[in-house]
Amino acid sequence: METLQPLSSFFKAIDKDGRISLTHIGIYAALLRYWQLKGYTNPIEAFSYEMMEVARVSSPSTYHKCVRDLHDFGYIRYDPSFKHNQRSKVYLLL
Image (cartoon, rainbow, N blue to C red; front, side, top):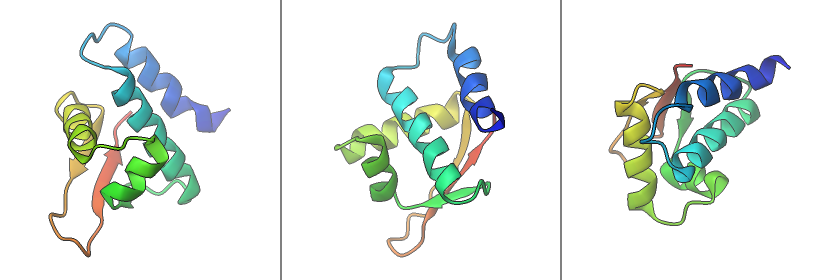
């Protein structure tokens, strides 16, 4: 049950946040899944195409907009690498 706590906290936090869409929720859930697969290390280090595949998001612009929104809204901390050979870092804050 401890592994469900971050998802539960996220749903409580977005309960009254009208800015969050299904795509935001899907990306956050994908981040949690990737976090689990990588041994619960924070930050998560991933290329955008890796996260897009897990989140089932096909548009890079949609993915980057939603990740930036989640960062701006305070749900994650996103440190993009801007380098094609270096993964970006995502810190789960909830």
